[in-house]
Image (cartoon, rainbow, N blue to C red):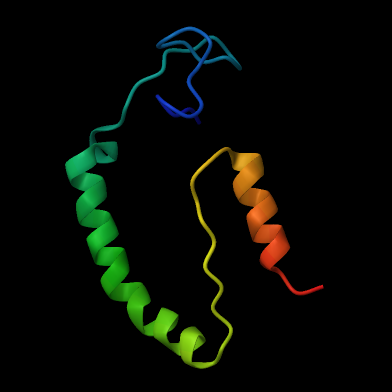
Length: 79
């Protein structure tokens, strides 16, 4: 997987791993993603509320590199 801003391929449109063509799926466009995120928020809200009330919910800032985010997640886990 690549990201246009945070993790682009070395050559635009070409997979670094196998040299294949990179393309964006029709269901992976901004308007469709927004719809999916809205639906997910509705479905996840009851679960999130449960864990928040139980004192088990941890929030992690998800911006930055994968390694940075992983360090934040790992730091938030119990020993």
